[in-house]
Image (cartoon, rainbow, N blue to C red; front, top):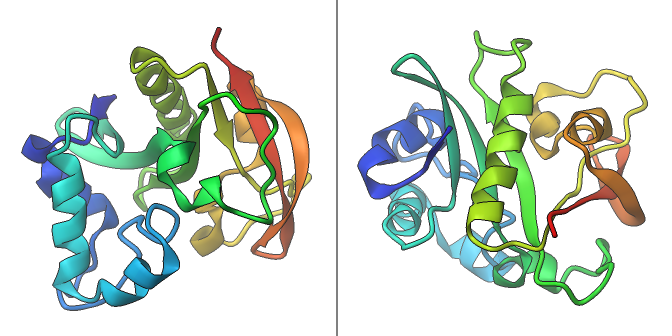
Length: 188
């Protein structure tokens, strides 16, 4: 696991960027920036924004590799810096300055190898190394049912439980037709 720094931006682009550089795909920004900024960032501006995030003192996420090939991404940051800080559908459990993991992405051809588990573990280790007292995730509670690949980025409850997270609260949020739950791992 390696932090998504400016030196690794090409790998970030491989995981998050579109095949067509002018396309306005997520770039893992829809839950990182407010909705107004998300709408204003179009085409290549989205990638440039992520490039600026990678140049910050604290990377915007972690990358997984198989040898030298980048195979996955997990977004992790302090919840206070994210729209989740003001979210009405996802509650606050307490006033701790928790970090959030909201996107876990594994490249096609590399799935079903445990990479999402390694990414979540890496995101937790990254948050811990930056003093996070706890880490939250907001995965779907799919109860073993198949989750559409395009909506699986939020993770599943089982992936978070396997990493030691426990359910801390229900949410009013839904993803891919499944309810999302607030999962939490205390680090102190």
